[in-house]
Length: 235
Length: 235
DNA sequence: TTGATGAAATTGGTTAACCAGATTGGTTTG
DNA sequence: CAAACCAATCTGGTTAACCAATTTCATCAA
Image (cartoon, rainbow over all chains, first blue to last red; front, side):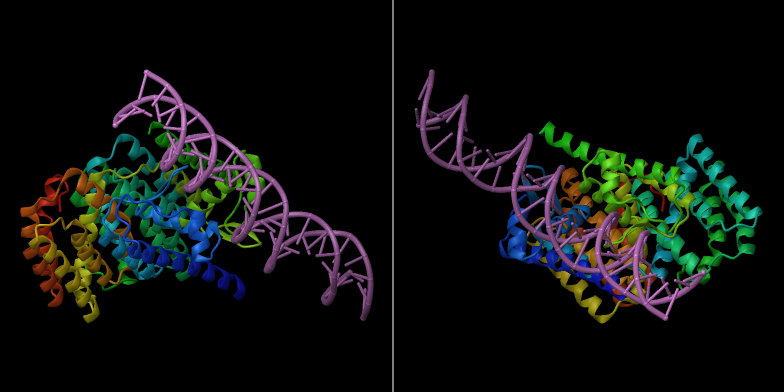
């Protein structure tokens, strides 16, 4: 068991080292936006790591949008300047994985916004999807079953109706971690889920009526218990 | 040129297909949380794609937190239930890449929060980093040079001082796209940058004085021009 | 019958060879 | 002299063979 964590740590460590070396290389060689990075083979040789490790590091930086690879051509530095590039790489290297409090803070922030946007932009189709998620949740709760997943799916349906793809993506990123943490800390017990039915219905109604103020207010009520786990998150 | 876009499209397409097939497989085989996925070799054979394609798709789903691979053991379904899993996979498949408006909306939302958190939680070290970023920005502007990057680095320093790793990560994700879009649409011309100096200084002062209300207010002022590009983003 | 044992099969990860398309630079041709 | 051309080279992507750790299961001992 200890070994597994160790290997994962080492793997992450190797990737961080490669990213750091790439940053130094870019600095040292004075590479500018649009310039081509040395080939993957060269980098793997120079950094003394496997080519697949190099590829994974490049993929990660592609995800952050500061590199992009073109098949049969090369890997290029994105159109952000050297200063921004260097600063961002430093930040990426310094990134820690999120704690529960940080997740909840962010979730509340995102959802108080998506619910407003959803009430302004939702289509009829969106309403149907939300209604379905709601019914699934209600069924589970009435049968006294755990309904954390159905809960989150309703919230994801709202994010979907907000028509903001960035916030939608971010909600998707934090949702699994929220679920596992909820189950770990037993945030939701059954009577809370029971309350949740009405709270969800209120939110749904506000969105249906296209009333952003009300929607936001009802979401806030719904998050009241969450606030307790994150008490100094002033609105 | 057309070919390059095509290959990228196809690559993304292949990955989406694999994810869809994984979803169907999980549904069909009734795989529960904690269960093991078939091996990468089997999947690549069954889906008729290369094993590396399978690995990349799995990596993506690992990033979203719904799978995790253990070396020499297997790939496992994360501890979120089948319902949540299935819903999330559908959402992931439906994700579109972000438009500028969505990016700006999200950035404003995040920054109005991080600036408040930063003013409550900033350390002396954070202040130094922000001061450095600020000086770099001012220098560039006074020399009438483009300072988009330095601008963003100041904002990233704020996100860093907010001590919320999730928001910090999200800011890093959207920053490069913000920069490229800014340069594409020429959002910042020189006299605006000139105004920016004072606006930045105001924000910095508010954070230094640990005044969250003021900090948020000054950030709002700073975003006034951005609002124009995203006018129906009501506060 | 039950628990321990260990060899064989299976796993994700790594490596190296290979592929097809893009790039390059020297040559040819008008 | 400049433009067109083509082959050698270089690129990221793919494939297949290999590795070491893990899992499995038939075997054996108590």
